[in-house]
Image (cartoon, rainbow, N blue to C red):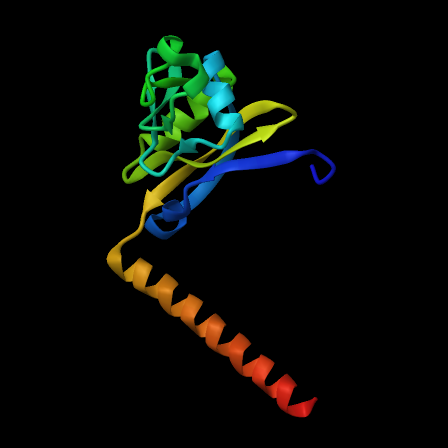
Length: 157
């Protein structure tokens, strides 16, 4: 995967803070022409997006893809539901797992891979307040250790 060209368009930075990520999966998207042009211009947001199951298909809701200016009146609705492209077995497995208590499906990243828009989705469980505090404390501890190590190295040199 390292030799492939991947251009990250949007990341859901809040997701790793709000949720414990259990599993991830790459999914394709069914898009209109103006949507892919807008994505290639980097005009998409997945902060408030989530994934739902309806009629045997997975859909991403709340993903904002800005209107493509040169299209004028042939533009798309920025918040329209978009279908995810997954195999039936993957859909069945993820739906069964997401129906367990406390699990949800959220997008982590929107990116272009070989010219095609892909969405990295995650099966996640909501963090409690004490889990968030624990994550913040761990991050602060790592920063402090790195800072002290760099100061020691500077003092020696």
